[in-house]
Length: 122
Image (cartoon, rainbow, N blue to C red; front, side, top):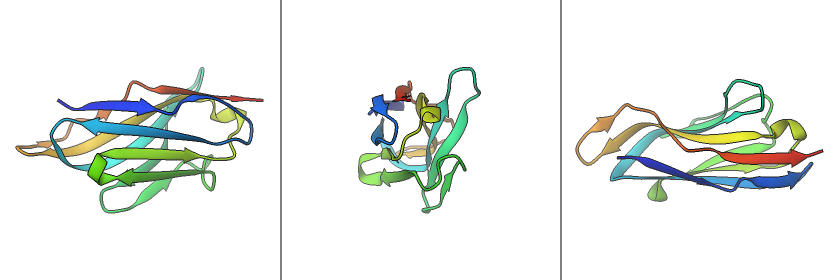
């Protein structure tokens, strides 16, 4: 029932900025946690940033001070503003949604976006 659509990936030079967006659809009343993960070539998927319904945020040490996660609950959208990008930020970025409340139930299943590729040139 729930679908996530991502946008914003692309090629950017070192030191540049990029903004990712992810919108969830499907009779959603509220979402507990919205987050961004990434998977670089040859590496495991890792948490980049998370934003809870109550306003708490969490960032990977590697992106603190450079990335900012935000939410627009009215549009069921999560954003990731990426500044001062480095080549090591190159990865496929996935949005994740956990703890969805619909008009009829609470859905504990995690939902994943299809991923958007961010490539940072050296």
